[in-house]
Image (cartoon, rainbow, N blue to C red):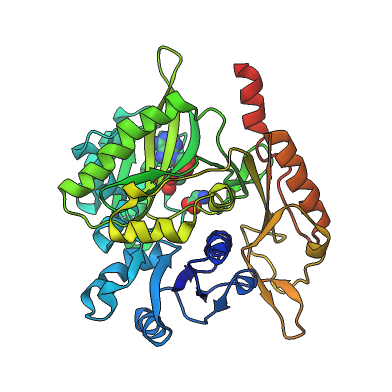
Length: 437
Ligand code: AMP
Ligand code: GLY
């Protein structure tokens, strides 16, 4: 069958790689894609939120399945757009309805959903400009650090964690009254701070049944030792060593099952990925308990670059079973090895950076997967940088230290002017394993 994948990052290159490997895929189109996805199928210059152009492409190219990478088209209602069209309604869509996408599109919606379904998460209250004074009073009842979250999508920047009460009060005012994050901060969730270790767990669901995909850990800060500015993600490891059977049992029973049941009970149409951003909090007995920090309605980036290479089951068959509501009939085979992904970024990222630098050395690396994030082929046919996060190197090995070494060696071989990467991806997990042994 012909398949369309929407998006243009490293996540999409990792998904495209798996789709292209499938015997079930005849032609893969990627809108808009990047220089990496061009080796898996045909890139089509269409924006991810241009639904009429996407619909036209689907009709003209006899596309039977659409897989949505990023959240923006989901929150904007791409699944509903297809569902309403007499011809497009039968196209298999991997991605939830706009209502389901509110789990990511509105922090308040997500928190209310979790409260309704007894899903463990930090205590919270939501405020608007009209209830600013209540919000200021509520802040004074909490202990530092203070967590303020713009309700809507704010390009990953809408969460503030502040040590000082006065600063938190000022920020709350700026968010609610001065529209610090535009309309996204017209409502603000203030929540209790959870202390622990973060990890990501991914679920594929047909709205009724689910498969829990491999866990992963993402490294968000630009600097080594988790310092400096937040980024889209500088690397990832899968699986997370401490997410053992006992911990994953809690995740499944306390979070995944009530989430799927909650969606069903509320008649929210959801066929796609659920990304659980979790905090593992150590309880009084010294065991780790999972709490939901956030839901996302898509795969993570760069988690996908370490999770997808570990999926052995044919992903097109998994997606088809998802669309048809029979995911329970599919097995999920996972590679037991560890994947380590190291992101290579442009000089200056996540602040301003240059594009167009010529990339060399990709042809010299072997036994690793190089996923493209921000790349393109220039007029001279050269591969050049075209974003802040440029390339991501993933290796799969029997142990985490081996996988890290292989990825770092490959990262070192790939060059352009000012390319940067974090050498310490996964080191915290290695230290933790030593402490626990
Ligand atoms: P979010 O966009 O909700 O995932 O928040 C961004 C980041 O802020 C998370 O990845 C966490 O590192 C941190 N964070 C969010 N909520 C909390 C919380 N309640 N306690 C501690 N850290 C948090
Ligand atoms: N890696 C975090 C995200 O995709 O949101």
